[in-house]
Image 1 (cartoon, rainbow, N blue to C red):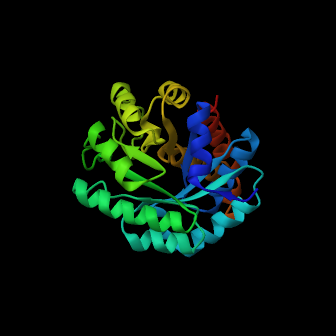
Image 2: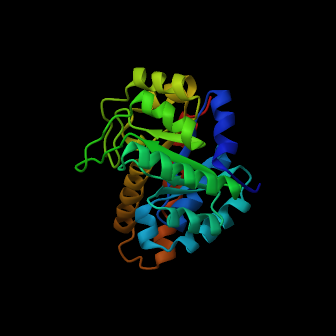
Image 3: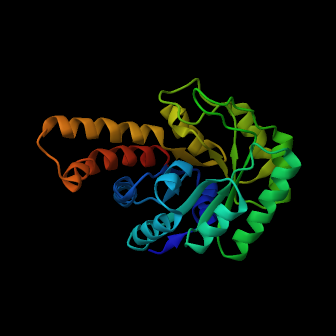
Length: 275
């Protein structure tokens, strides 16, 4: 199956009462495991290259890796630029074959966020690519504090930007290593009623699994970004592999041992979001 855009997988999710996993990738090994997991579950998946991944590996390399995985997959695969912070990030990603870009203007004043996001959404749509934006600010564990999404501002953001999905701040936090107190479901419902747009939760690893499952089925949240809990599995599996075979030194042999644990965890993440 060919690559899919974000809109092509999120609109059916919105109509069908489920969500799609946006899985944060840091290299070939985890990205390949996530596609294998999606195929095993018969579900679409969103492969995401965020700022950390792009600092380690150039964007054209991500474009080529994602394209290879997506074009060989039996399920729809979205290739997504996560947290693009300027127009050039998004322009390069589109040129390199990404099917979806996120412009993160959440640190900007509202008017500037809307204006810049609208320009990037227009550029993306002209190229047949989807666009995600963010309103409110999703903070970071042990870092910048969150600023909750105002439902009225979210309505204006949806109306004036034309984005295909909106990332919101409703109690979620990036890089959270354990489950927190959960999301503000009343605020989610108010935002959903005023926008009609698929909603996105960044920092999904910190959301209790039962709440993720329920919100996927019963709300307009159509995409959960999951990174930290998968990186925790990667790290634990790597340490276990090295401890079990201390004389092992070949990179391919070491990293190949991580495929099954990563695939199994990604399958559970994907399955929890499905009907």
